[in-house]
Image (cartoon, rainbow, N blue to C red):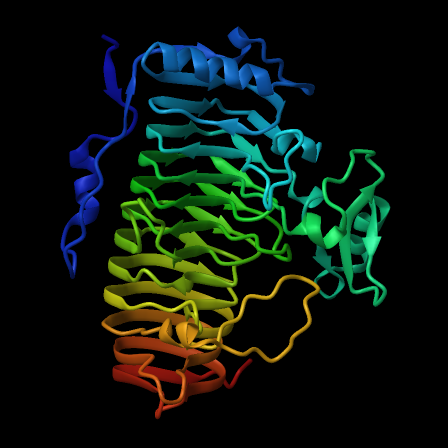
Length: 463
């Protein structure tokens, strides 16, 4: 039998994060990996930035699976590869100065002869247990070859750089698609818009248990960066997630329907939501639904649409969550609670405290119930909702926010529900100090019931 070891801190080390919690949160347990080691070079990998190493990754993971698990080490070098699929018991370890670049040929990300709605993630795992990605190297998703870009978000220099890649610009000259690029790699859909909808995540794990992400950098994803879904016992410790501020759907760390998770000591600087909790539709036969037992602590978020975000999908509910001792610097919004008809669910026992913020371009705290997700290039038309979508209205309640300090936000606190529906109630905000530039409170009191106790809102008259 293979020797087993925990690849990270002992359980007692994680226990320190769970001290003095305002509500019970189930603690994570360490991920365990067998003590077997293989180098990617032993599997035929060449770190010259030119040799495709997809087969080397497959070979190394397959060999470790035969041995009962272990560590596949990626040494210093630039490693070009197609998608990587982790299996149970395998740790992928990136040495310092190891850079894994995902190849620009879009055909590598789906099986020949198929026409998927969305291509395979760069890094994936399905129904796996005890999987880990550790070290201090970098994963680069090559997202600039997948994402559309808006002219309004680009400087003249950046826009010129995209145009020089080839691509297609819309008739209004306001949107660029990576279509018919000068690189010569073929497109994989019939239209630029169709290919845009096929973008993948940099990392997506589904129905997995016992996940560790530690130390590495995830950058430049085609879509979301780090995205565990319908999974349990997740440890995210000391990772960096980054991409340009102006990319489409560049979410940082998203947990979609996950139970028992710890996110600590990580840095996020991205083009969409920073630390985001989601819950979509229930999957038949899948035993994890909703987000619960989550602790988020000691993280830094720089640019993002929101520092900490709930939604927009909250259908399965968000419960038993503590978010504390985090800092948000330069995000669009600080604490962002967003949902809409057809996307909503109930929140229970959410505690947010000791959040330090500065230079927030919009709201320090916002509750929004009319959120609609629109793809780049879509026409903003009035929407109609079915009775079922109206039944799935958001219900933000049992949320407790305290000791938020924010120096500089356009609006301090904003909240609006939906007329005739009980979407925002039993929210208490206390012991906070927010310096705002334009608006202190913008609360629609008939539809949003918030209790503010010892909340100091001060206008910045020196801006």
